[in-house]
Every structure is written in C-alpha cells, then in structure tokens.
Length: 269
Image (cartoon, rainbow, N blue to C red; front, side, top):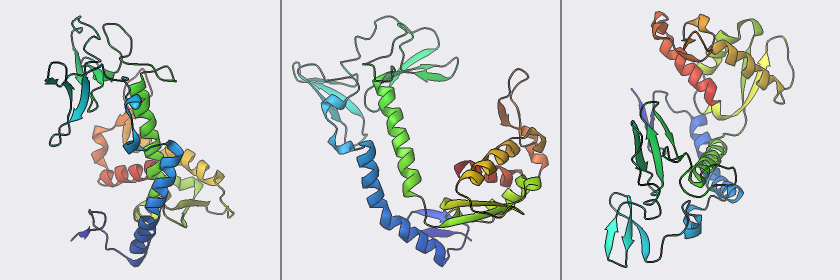
C-alpha cells in the first residue's frame, strides 16, 4: 500500500498524519513569499531578461532569436536573406579548424556552445582548438555563460533550502561511542518532513542547548563514520588516492540499501 499526495504530486509509503498535513500547509503558505524574497535577493527575475543579459551579447543586425513552441528549441532568423537556422550566428566564426579527436561541440538550449571530451568524459566552455572560452568573460575570469549558469544554480539551491524548511526543530539524541548506529536509528525512524526542521542535536550525558556548535560536531563525527571503509559500504577508488566509491561487496550487509538511504538523508541534512 502506498499513498498519493495530489497537492505535491508525490507518493509515499508512510501513512499521512495530521502533523505532515499541517507542515505542508505551512510550507505552501510561505512558499510564494519566500520565492519573492529570494528573487529580490539574488535578482532571479527570469521574465525580465533582456538582450544585454545574453551571455554571448547582442545578435548581429538583421538577426532575431526565437523559440519553437513545441520543442522549446532555440533557432535564429536572418531577416536579411529570409532564412532560419539552428546555429547561433555569433558562434559560427569561433574556429573553422576541426576539433581534436574525441571532441564534440554541442549547444545548450540557449544556443551557447560547449565542448565534450569523450576520452575523459568531461565538458567545458573552453574551445580545445584555441584554449579560450567561447563568448565574453565574466567578472570571475571564466566564461560568462558558465558563470551565469553556476550563479543561478547557487541561488536556486539556496531558495529550495529556504522554501522547503519547516518550522520548529527535530531532536536527535546519540551517544559518542555509537554515533553511527544511533544516528541511523534516529534518522531512519523520522519522516522526510521532520528532517527539514532545524536540527537539535544532543549527546547522551551532555545535556545543554545547541546553538549550532553541537550540530557541527555531530556532522563532523558522523561524516567520518559513514565513509569509513570498515563498514563495507565504501571503498578506496585506488591505491594512489583516498577517493571513495561504493563498495560492490556492500551486499554482504542485508540492510545495505537502507544504510545508503540513511547516508543520503544525512547528506541532505
């Protein structure tokens, strides 16, 4: 049996309770106001963008940028010779040289070119033929198209953190000697709505107020424990570095999927 929330268009295995419904109503009532405040703070007024906001600058005379209403793909109209094309006329003169082996050039939905290195499976805004970024540079010394996208992601991330927060706090009590298992039991028995509340961490035998310092210490201790290869959940990616990857043998623990869910919840907190 599972439950469907038609308000948020989500499903859950947990039976809805009065606290969950009340928390959703509080979140919904403050969402519009929070969105407005966040847009004012980070200037995310997407509907007020002008041609000067385009990362590649204005189009040449006689050109117009349009969007296909069905596919949402951007195309360009040349009113001088009455033709249309998918390629941005501002990037056609980037370089006539062929790309190096293993490289490919693609375009974002806004028509900004980027390059894919299939040998390393990485992407970049720097043209591998010239070593320079395509388009004008931003204030941080990188391509303006990348900078604008990255700054938008940061602002959107902060807005989502604010808009999804829930009033009051959630209390988690653990012992220092068993912080991994105690945290697992505390986090997994709480529903997702409760985990959006402000954390109130308490170590057993150390009663006191948590103004953030105890929570930071708990994050520090637990982050070291959850990534400990001795739990067989993660392993070192190689002998020459300390990068970690999921251990293929983690199935030896019959509850390994629950532990990965627990780690995901902890990271999201």
